[in-house]
Image 1 (tube, one colour):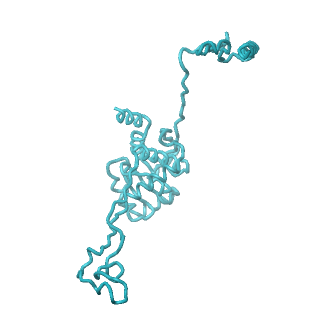
Image 2 (spheres, helix red, strand yellow):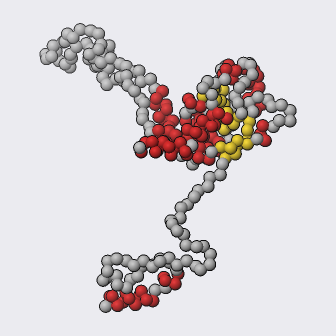
Image 3 (tube, one colour):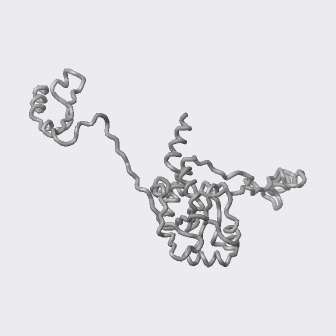
Length: 287
């Protein structure tokens, strides 16, 4: 009876008219295999694909106007030139949880962990019992190094330890991409051709930074060492600091409102944090 009803429903079903993949209900009880009707394609229009279709995401590059640390010559406007940035590195989704993990991981590594107290076994003094155990009417006491007495040891006091925590390398790299993207989104990321500064006068550096409208600024150099002129000119200013791209971390990108990168630093970041580098590292780890 049920088989006849199912056969009637299968014959009267309108799913076959919608040109969709459907399963035949007739004979389902007699055979465990399910017959799948082929997909119907219109005679005109798209041809039948030979294989499965793959979604291809096309990421548009990020364009940032160039800046100049040195006053440009007359008629030369550095903002007319655009720096092309990798969207995988400088346009990553903002993840506050990843930033929090990276910042806590970095600050934990800065803790000295040198706090130390003496236990009752390390305090100098005699081990003689202060008074007899019974008969005095007072509480029982041992030696003079007891934590209950003044000058005695410390019970459960701090001991030298390491506060460093572990964090996967991929999470740290993701934190760098998120921090760079967030700083660029807040218009706090500047790209300059070079960080070479003529002379070492702090006054000239301060005037140029105020002219550009930069407040607290971190200069990141792609060279092995920070240019000497820039380092000497900014060393006396508390709101300016310099570092190399190899020493750059997520905490610096979060802490400083303005981050100035030279072209070499941008190339280094795109090489180490780019998509090709991530794929290569995954292949090496799987091998």
